[in-house]
Length: 137
View: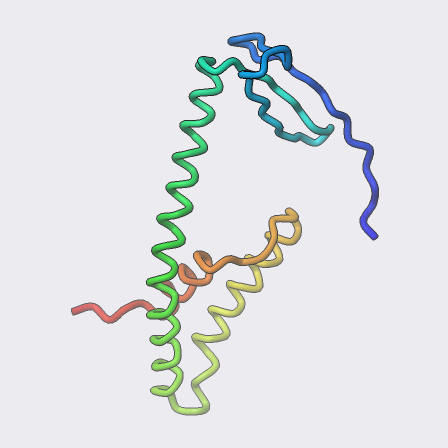
């Protein structure tokens, strides 16, 4: 069972609008840091909150583009990997695959150390693209 950590919940006023939970139209943004949970309220027209929403939308769009890229790239890179494997003599088959696998294992270790989860499809696709690039025309 993971260690239980007492996390504080702090309400921090927005430096721009100084909103609180007193109005039904105010928005609560919840975040966290190493100490605990941070609650920050914003008015509907708060410039800080509007900028935060804009940044979230930019991040969502970036993740969407990366996922679309990976969904196209991964199958093609995987097919190239299989083709490269079939093309090599048996005694040479391990070399490029071991390099790609070592990179995946290293990345997974880094993610686990930082509690960042698992190597995602986008990262797999990037690694396969490096080790098994598409043929240049």
